[in-house]
Amino acid sequence: KNEVEQSPQNLTAQEGEFITINCSYSVGISALHWLQQHPGGGIVSLFMLSSGKKKHGRLIATINIQEKHSSLHITASHPRDSAVYICAVRPGYALNFGKGTSLLVTP
Amino acid sequence: DGGITQSPKYLFRKEGQNVTLSCEQNLNHDAMYWYRQDPGQGLRLIYYSQIVNDFQKGDIAEGYSVSREKKESFPLTVTSAQKNPTAFYLCASVKDRGNEKLFFGSGTQLSVL
Image (tube, rainbow over all chains, first blue to last red; front, side, top):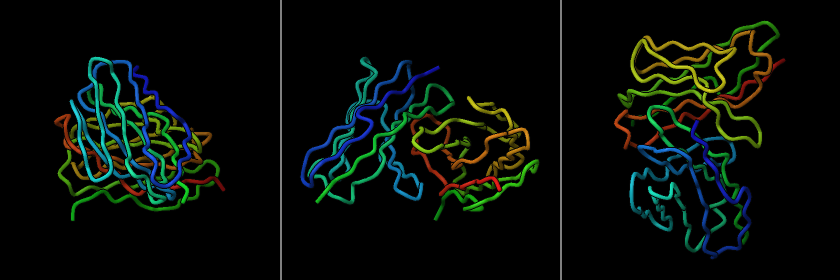
C-alpha cells in the first residue's frame, strides 16, 4: 500500500509570507496531484505532476521522482489562500491521498 | 461546461435503510472514484472503476456497493451493513492516461437520523 505523508499538518502564516507544503510517498507512481479543498468541501485540482516543476500564478509545484517527494509553494500568500491542501498519488489505477495540510493566512 | 455532478448535497439515512448517492460526469472520463472523508481525516477510497461494467474495491468497501452500467454514471449505495455511514462523500474522475487532471464533485454529506 502506498503511504502518502504530508507536512506540516497545520500551518498559520501572515499575509505575504512564502509557504511550503511537503508530500512524501512510498512507492512508484505515474502522477502526483496537488488539490485544494475549501470550507464546504469542494475540491479543485491545482497541479498534476509526473516530473519537474509547474507554476501557476503564485503557486509552484515541484516533484523529485527519485526521492519520492513533492513540494507545493505559495509565494506572497494571501488570506484567500486559506484552505486545506491535499497531495494525491496514482500508483497504478488507484488514487491515494495524504491527510492534507490546513493553511490559515492571516491579514 | 463539462464537470461532475453529485447529488444530493445532503442526505439523511434511517436505521436499516439503504441510500444511493449519485455521481454523473460529462467529461468522457474513463476512471471514476468514490471517497469518504471523516472530520480531520484524509480521503479514503471506497470503490473505483476504470471501465464500464468493471469496478474494484478500495480500502473501505465493506457496507458499500457500486455499479458502472454507463460510462458517465457511477452511483454509490450505502447499505444497512455500513454501521457508521455519517461522513462526507466525494466522487472523482480522470481520463485514464495517468497524466490528466482530476475532477471532483461537490460532495454529499450523509447523516444518520
